[in-house]
Image (tube, rainbow, N blue to C red; front, side):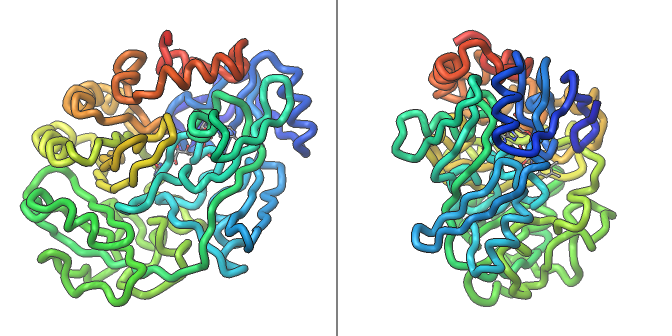
Length: 412
Ligand SMILES: Cc1cc2nc3c(=O)[nH]c(=O)nc-3n(C[C@H](O)[C@H](O)[C@H](O)COP(=O)(O)OP(=O)(O)OC[C@H]3O[C@@H](n4cnc5c(N)ncnc54)[C@H](O)[C@@H]3O)c2cc1C
């Protein structure tokens, strides 16, 4: 059986089937006792596993259908952002935002609340206008924004069925300039975090959590020429990877050169391995009002994190109303960790990080490594019990359940 992208989880499912049509997929779902969708396998845990069968949608066409009048695109459940973005751009259209990599499937990213950065940018799931889900009986349900179950059914962890089509908001294509600045002082960040994160359409800060400076600021602008310096931090004179020593060929264009939205908003280029390819990741989304306190906690922990950390990243995500979103009901600051690929060492550190961050309301990213379960998860995701009830109504026999869901949902 296959492993996930990071190689830290070997799927325990009895097999993977790759239907050639949605009708075949529906038959498989109706027939099996336990089944679950497999995306592009970029999550870092057993979230996508099943005690039964996994269904990959990779063999189905991406089916990118643009509706210019409604400013929407509809894509198949196996489509990846990279291919959707190219098809959109070719016709003069764009998405509002992308994650750090274009390799991930749209359905898998939406299911886990995956996000990019930007004070006014919601998670990628906020672009979803409609979703078509194959339920336990093999029937397709189509939910739109006016449906009472919609807000619980978009970021849904694969628990409500297999998403076969998604409709997303689009806008006219636009250019982005990406500029890297180096050595931004923590004083500047902590004195006025709003000035830092509002400094461009999308801002990412990369740090090792030790020292008195943020190593790199990735500034992605839709407006004019980027500033010569950013709050006192100078422009990088050479192309930068956020990971020391990694190949800069893998990163998207820098130096303020304008380029298409989908070649600047992700950090990594589609044709290359994203990041370094050998890593684990964790991330916590903290309500914006507690961001400075959370950053201070992580700087305190910095010396303990350093031996296991490749890099940390700070991004922002706008508030939304999707029940299981890390930004549900609050603007959020996302605190991300790219770890070395040492599972015991990473999991030994996570309790200390969660002891520091969860009391501040930080929500673990569903697709990355975390240790909180049941009550601790419920304390930070206020609609978790509503989601558990929705799941019990839609899938009473737990056909789409798995060990991950048992751990995080606990008892409602
Ligand atoms: C190098 C790297 C960089 C990353 N960068 C970011 C980032 O910038 N921002 C961020 O927020 N996250 C990031 N992530 C995390 C990643 O976006 C999430 O883990 C995402 O869920 C991966 O999507 P996937 O298609 O690989 O899903 P998988 O890992 O295959 O599955 C994830 C979940 O989605 C469900 N699922 C998949 N397809 C369907 C479907 N058709 N219907 C129903 N459920 C489905 C699965 O059952 C599972 O529960 C990164 C991961 C990696 C490896």
